[in-house]
Length: 366
Length: 107
Image (cartoon, rainbow over all chains, first blue to last red; front, top):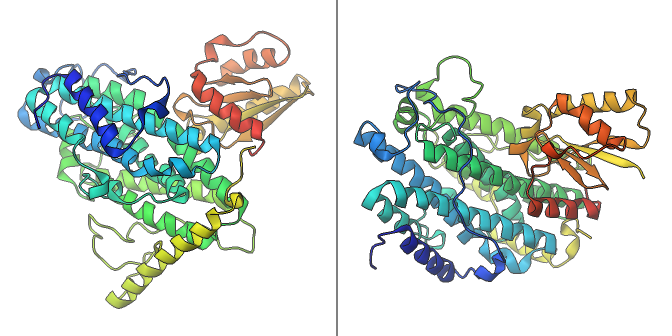
């Protein structure tokens, strides 16, 4: 396939990508794809070795190639998640429980596409041939073939319980990543993600209200909802990266990516633990949201909970280790049995299929 | 007609001060004797980056990024005064979806 040479070339590829994944652009109505730039928190670099200098407006202003490479990598990873999520969710359009949910899904998809568009705009505009090549590759990988860059974005989203759980927790990871990038020393990236963050909140809202409607309806067993939480939360933990990441350390030193609470953090950053600390913030936030959902569960039924950070991890200190949902260490056979019991199974899919035949599994919107 | 002031209380807006805002709003509504106004917490409006948010329902006015110092103008509006235009920042398509949700009475 010929390489792209301009952003307009990339737009043509984007339209081909929509067609290839089977996304009908007419669903988007008069939605206009465009680049949006929000406001900078500060004109000067906010942390790291270059603190106090003017934020870089062009790649040429970045002091060395290692920083430029790390920046390009951050943009590529962000962009990859955006297109992947549309690939994962597009099959749900025909099974939306209400017209409101269908409209919400289309809005979420259109904004995720726009976020991918925005990242490709940065790559194609600022990073020369290597950026254009990466922008092209973002449209070539596929969630369906499992070659998206991060684990969550290769997992199947089979039904609307998946979707609401995904937007509640995986999109919430997106909020964390975008918040950390919104302090970036590269001004076009910081401005881009500031605009994306505004839109991301509606996605999380869709998840939170969707799950609330499911819990209040009381038709899907809490044990099955819990299994979906186990599936998506454990993979969402991985999205924060390895516990003691040198990449995160350097991204901080170079001012490319801040702490989640950079705007209010007191004291120096614990640079060896940046990913781990962001994950801990995420865990605490998810805990509050799950507490809110539990308020709608009758007293005689089991409560939902957030799985332990050690459960079912694919990267970091606990990768491949045998920890239970509650964080206890298990023997190999015992763990394999446990994992089968607490993650969604074909039998759960079958049962959900039966439940979805009636409309009352989720509070209706009329 | 009774106006309901919905104040978002999800995790992000709480971090932006929505709990304190709601308490202050309740206090000032009581002090002004606005008996046809009821203040209620609301799950979320999906616009947390612009939060805290207050939506007046059934009137369907949406005030975003509300600070305690804005409450005087919001309360004046509730008492029959003009809209607080500077707080009207949310795009119309999001408003349409959220008002649709409110109209269902599900939340």
